[in-house]
Figure 1 (cartoon, rainbow, N blue to C red):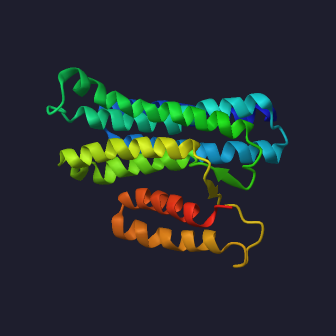
Figure 2 (figure 1 turned 180 degrees about the horizontal axis):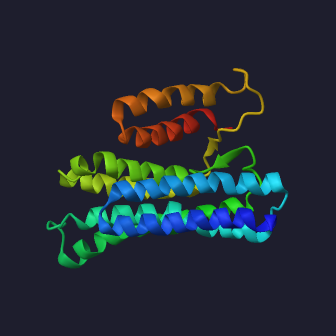
Figure 3 (figure 1 turned 120 degrees about the vertical axis):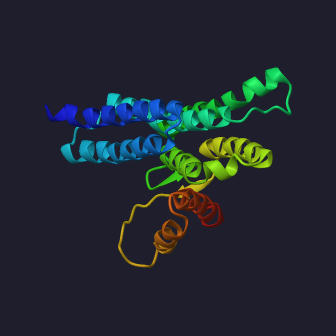
Length: 230
């Protein structure tokens, strides 16, 4: 019985992603973000449970990637897609204007590539190579929830979001080492970057609210790029 517990938790992650996608298409980005966060919680506990129960399995690893691509790949892409649908792109030829919102799903494809790469990459035991999909999903969900109306106020911001979406798609598979919040010891030495990162998260959330989560992910990427290169 216990061997099915981690996979059940993984399936709860997948279901959370499906619900997040539904709310994204309905234009309720707050609920979409909420279910992405719920999915992230399930994603955290499925691996931990498998290790604690000593029931890790190849099928669990594959199921985890499938669930993650729904919750952290397709759901945030759906948020961006529906948000872009609210802009007419009237300055572009009609066929191009019709296609523009669909560019959001490029990120879902790159998320799948990132997850497949992660499954085969043995270098990512204590850190990541490229941006983790949960961090990417939280960035986009919180950005649209917290700043979506302001970003929609100008064509410059709209196209800026599309360019940034393509940049983050690249970051998912980029050969850029990024730290994981895993601690071998609890002292300052060796954990400087992680502790500095955690200490700056609280003021960002207090000052920026929901958008602070997007700022935290951006800070994480910048800090990793500056400190983790070998």
